[in-house]
Length: 94
Image (cartoon, rainbow, N blue to C red; front, side, top):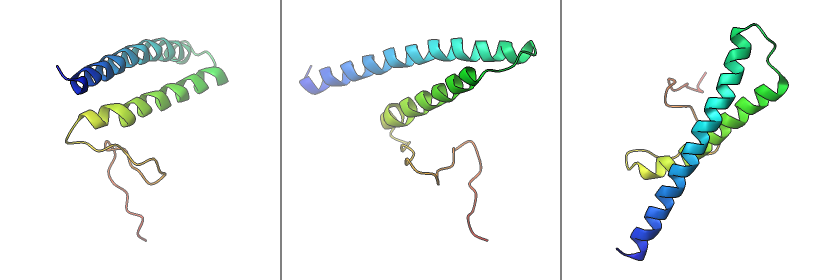
């Protein structure tokens, strides 16, 4: 194994650990908010902020790390004009 292979392995293991942590965070955060919605409780400002932070963290991990591991994918530009691939492209022409 070369040093390059070693560093790639370290990077992949670190990303795996980060994704596991995000999974735990997502499970706890979403479950709490879903329960509040289901049982007709008010959703708190803290819960909304926790969901926003979760979405930000997931997007960051996806774009900064995961997209770079897939040859067929490019990371999203960090600008306001990007459109998530799950939505149709919107033309700005009028």
